[in-house]
Amino acid sequence: MSNVEENDLHEENQEGEEVQELSFEELGLDPRLIRALTKKNIEKPTPIQQTGIPLILEGKDVVARAKTGSGKTFAYLLPLLQKLLSDNNTSPSKALAPTAMILVPSRELCQQVYSEVLSLIELCRVQLKVVQLTGEPSFSEMATALSGPPHIFVSTPACVQRCLSSGVLQAKSVHDSLSVLILDEADLLFTYGYEKNLKDLKTHIPKKCQCLLMSATSSDDVESLKKLYLHNPYILTLPEVGDGKDEIVPKNVQQFWIQCSYRDKLLYILAILKLDLVQKKVLIFTNTIDTSFRLKLYLEQFGIKSAVLNAELPVNSRLHILEGFNAGLFDYLIATDDSDSKEKDQTDENKQIEKKKFKKNKKRKVDLEFGVVRGIDFKNVHTVINFDMPTTAAGYVHRIGRTGRAYNTGQSVSIVSPEEMEIFEEIKLFLGGENEDKDLTYIAPFPLLEKNAVEFLRYRAEDVARSVTKIAVKEARAQDLRNEILNSEKLKAHFQENPRDLDLLKHDKLLSKKPPAPHLRDVPEYLVDPTTQQASKFVKLTRAAFGRNNNNGNNRGFKGRVNKKAGDPLKTFSSQGKGMKRKGIGKEFGPKQKKKQDV
Ligand SMILES: Nc1ncnc2c1ncn2[C@@H]1O[C@H](COP(=O)(O)OP(=O)(O)OP(=O)(O)O)[C@@H](O)[C@H]1O
Image 1: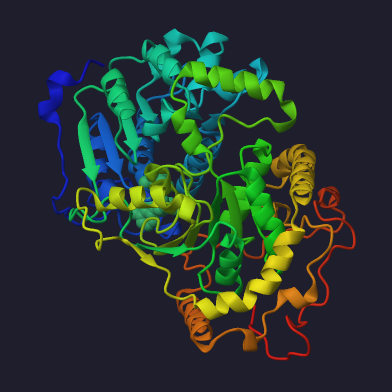
Image 2 (image 1 turned 90 degrees about the vertical axis):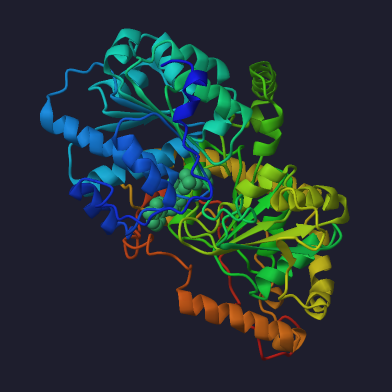
């Protein structure tokens, strides 16, 4: 590894160049890998895969910068596995440390990458060992994980450092064995406080080791990492379309916005969801955990069940919430995204202060390895709603990048209050690049919601909003946390034995003390104006035409596997109290109304 400055001549910037369509076979991939991809319904490589795979197979160091959802994970996993498959065929391993390390910034990403590698290995039916480790594992956990050693070790930089300093991982063994190092979500690694870990780790990385750096955006941190780790790198910058307009946001995501007062945000989101004006699945972002619970409690009263996801929840619960949502067990997920605030805390020193602060407040300990937005592959999300606007333009890009992934389509709806207009303007400017033409905005007003439809809902909506008091929110948040902590350990043990038991992943249980009132559950047609009814029908027809979740078949295989064992001890660990099962479905919204919106 040496400094990259003098090797800039080797850089290839493919921006704007037409990418030639090649198949996986033409990229030279092993037939076993191609079969595995076919089983996953993945037929043709994305542009970053077309360009990146051959270079990585040749053993080059590569920096890959491509949009969110563009398939960067397979761009490095496929050539990595190919290399390990051929190594496996040729020589028996004498390694004392992993052959490849994949370093990611968060636990969620670690789990995601691990699952992705594992499933490819299983589908290829080959004997390769992959292990993941995050957080602060005990000596024996580290020793177990690294015994063997695994071919691929997926971890965070801090955790690898811990393995090294405890002596479980010998620096010399790393030096002798490591042949591929991948830094995924590279633009986040410093932000999450791993700068020192990465600088220390660098001294143990052998010169012969191939280094890959994957990132959705370019930043000073990516530059620093590139200089620190890479040698003669090929720089791939791959927006799918080089016309400048949709370089940042995938062009298959339609962006909309709604302007309303802060107070009316609840009313508007209710209207969108209840009148069926957006496609499911829906990922909703809030800026605070309290807001997420407020929203959950509020929507519950109208019969809309959702799950919350935030840094406060125990890691097992978070992972299961993601898994449940990805498997299609619930349609609405309210995520509290704190990556923006993380991005402001650039230094290790700040991280330490933050850590101490959280240690003091153990009741509300937030996991610093949590990352809900960046890099997480939420499967088949069609709509992203910004209930609160993110605090940075980059935050916006990463949020809406959770939809329209790979070849799927998606949409985003931002609910913007007057207080948020400044950041909204900033976002528009950011998306429009240099072009300051005010008419040229890529975020269009949401077209399907008529003022009348909103106003008809106002009375009920405001009534319910008032009932969701600060105390109710506080209690719901505490209750949810208690339930999840209780569930977390049980879930961990249970899932080790029953990895496919999806029934337990339903984290969208009701938190309200009272079940939703029947008259709030259904909206009678007379309350909805004809235009909105048309819009709603149109959305439903589109959904029917594309299949329920507009998915690409990734959920297949989960159906029918739900384990409904009556005697399951975990079933008693529910956030839903006895007698809270919903009754009375089908009652009217207003008195004596028979016609209803189909919800
Ligand atoms: N060639 C392909 N064809 C169809 N789907 C693909 C292909 N490659 C990857 N995918 C799917 O696309 C989704 C997004 O891929 P991935 O998570 O690798 O994106 P990413 O570029 O890493 O995004 P981010 O920057 O947000 O992390 C995944 O669900 C993955 O299974």
